Image (tube, rainbow, N blue to C red; front, side, top):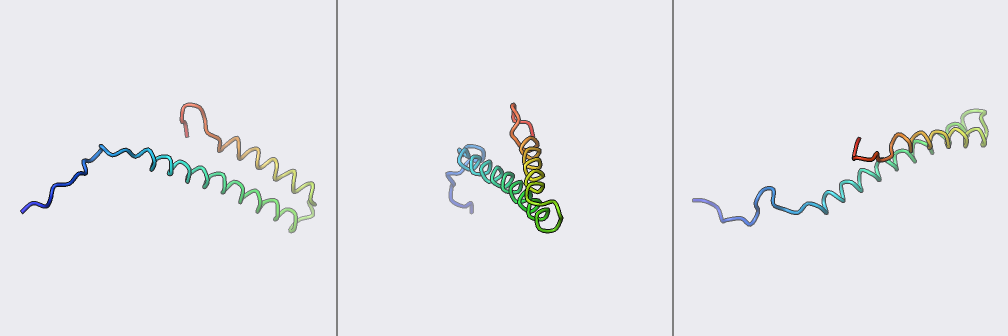
Length: 79
C-alpha cells in the first residue's frame, strides 16, 4: 500500500531565503575569523613581546588590510 500523496516535488521549492541565510552565515564567519585573528595577533604582540602599542597596532592594521584584500568578494562571484 502506497503512502499518502505529498505536496513536495523535488526541485520546485523556492530556496532564496535559505541561500541568503547561508551567504550571511559564511560572511559573518569569514569576517569574524579575520577580526579574531587580528585581535589575537595584536594582543600577543602587545603583551608577549617588546613591540609596544604602536608596533602592535601597525602590524594589526597591516594584517587587517591584507586580510580584507584576500577575503573580499570578487566581481563575477569568484572564490
